[in-house]
Image (tube, rainbow, N blue to C red; front, top):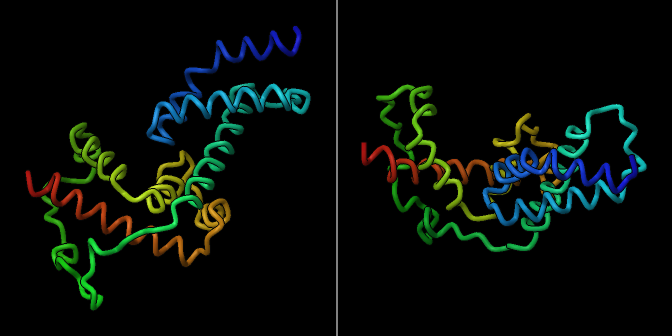
Length: 186
């Protein structure tokens, strides 16, 4: 089978699983479609490097992971301003001390994670995060094999201290969003 025939066969076979994974990682179908196209372009360009030691889908998923990391790295660097005015007064004190209170854990975590409405609310809250927070959040928590802090820091070219601050602020904003959009309505 020629290189062109093999790539064409892979496109037919693996487009759907790659697209599902890309949509999961990017939360944007149009961006995901573009990334999947880039995966096949890269696969075509580096086809001679594919030794067949792994399944083609495994190799393509690795390329996809690298493309997603590149996408987030580029996007992270292009949006430099994050405002914390939502959380803090000018003097540095909290605008709303409710974010410091414990949640009423009337429902067990496992029940919440099985609740489709809660998961939709959580996804909406994640999407509402500033991009400079959402990107590290997704890379750290939503990657299939939960990346470690040094990997995420390296991929985004930020210090581990900065990563932990971003994750902390993201969790605070997620908590407030869930408090308002889920727990207050329950």
